[in-house]
Image (cartoon, rainbow, N blue to C red):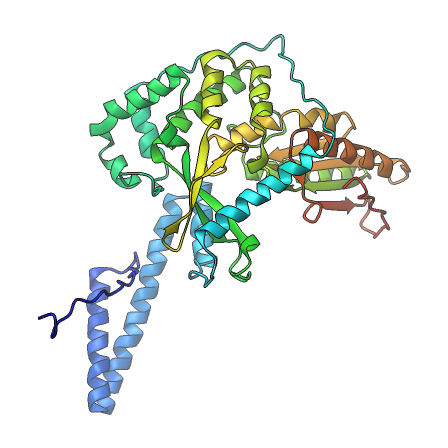
Length: 450
């Protein structure tokens, strides 16, 4: 048997089943394939006409099935902007096939680690101002995170996006299905972490997947990849619980930045866009020229200084066991890169907040909370969305000091960024000038602050 029928390994191809393909369409496809084989064998005109008739009917049926499928999908997702965006992205930009590359998982881990180290070393070599945070006198204190009922845990578990991390022992979709049976155990883990102010070490691990930023980019250039973190599903449930309590605390005590559109009810990318464009339209109506500056940061989430972040949380009234929970959440984090079926060695993270997490964007917005005072002190308006910041300054066309005011504001922002270990990316920072009238004007751009 070993001589006649030796054991061989065959790689199974991933088959894709169209969601609109019904049993009737499958039967019609089999009839079409049978008619094609019959015509190729007989070469008769009657068989060719029969094949073309079936082919035309099958194409019309498939088009109709696709239309009905996506129409129903869009109607059911009409109130969820994220789902709508994903549907349109999948239709307009279908996923590209895996890019050929000789890169390894260790290459990505080394590149990422060295990149963060280089950025952090630039802050060590520069004189930085001390970042002191004073407690607001009217700010109440959040000393303890509240335990949650099993019903709330079940609701969060079922509402989470079931993305599975390779570190999860149970696939997320399956965990959601059997969550009622595991609910007492999950609730105990969540409440135990909240009351003790400790995050289990197993929750602090992440798997990182490199994804090419754009299909047209060179797959052999490691800088063309974006690293996406996959976190434990149970950690996301815990983060949702903490995020809800922290957001309620900030909202009730008016501690949110009013110009930050993230983790606030009725504040989204649409409201951020409207806020910025309305200011520009109002300035044009008032016969004022405007300057719009779009700041871009290099690896913003990855260079967040933990000591500065924890000091900022204290200034917002977070102390006691609640503060200890955030300190435990940030301490001892690690990651591994997975690429082409291989995994790199674990790497420690001494800075940054996890970008693929629930809490990461909220913590980053609190980390950059004080930059609003710097911008406002120069008479500029601003709007933020996570790590994206837009500055707006309107002035009369006859104002000869506008350029100097812009340079002074950007210089102070640069100093603030250095003190908070955030690096501006000059090549991607954009300065737009909108004149008071539609006619073109010559404008001098002074970017020496970079």
